[in-house]
Length: 334
Image 1 (cartoon, rainbow, N blue to C red):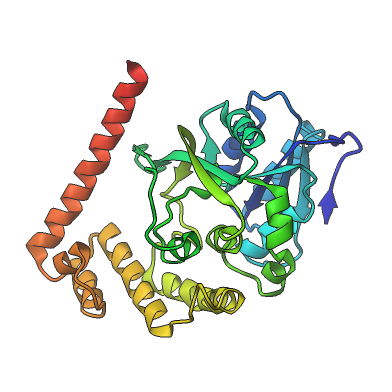
Image 2: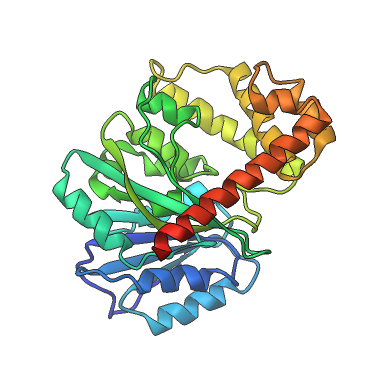
């Protein structure tokens, strides 16, 4: 079901997509941060609700009624998954540029869109621009700043994306929509009900355009809320990876020369992701079990095999995040 007003903006330059599922308590902040942008162009906000089970749809309807010139709603009659929901929204977008913002994130920089659109307008070779970001623990209120350094990849950019070396916050991204239209099969996202909409899209466009990270902080990512991309339980994470394995094979089939299908490599990636969750949960027993399944000598794997080293690693990671956060706040003060 599409809910659209006759007052809806006619010629938006930027389309902002919000894939929505539940989070009635955070989606207002997401929408407000978009509406509060200071920019000299028109925007449209396309929100797809994937059969929320809380009051998210009620919140969305209130916003659409209050801001009919900017918001269009797409209500699915069954749950189709994050990637398919995002793709369905993108197919409705009319802007020259396409921005993302997930419904547990928000833009803390009111000049975000203007800065990114100005940059894209002046750099025809760049098809995707993203920024630094910060995370917000919604339980404790703790904020940590993340600075993305300019990285020269030894591997191809598509391979760097594939193996997770490319660092990017999805809710900070703005695309030239033509890059998506020409290189991403959105119908496949819907047909196969992909569970993701970011990493796979970056891989799809990596060979066809340039990525750039603006050195400013614009986006806050809520990390305490559970989601398909941030599950808190091992079994849910395993279910996610079972689903993503089909998407992994799909991408390998699209780019066989760049991405040879490696089932054992994918299984190792799953174990490493589970190990990261064990560190987040401070679960030494599970970390030790998982570390034994991973065939590499990384510091994280080595520390997982010794209780004292495990806790030192956890503590140092927290100290590092705190130092980055303090340095960022000092910079903003002075």
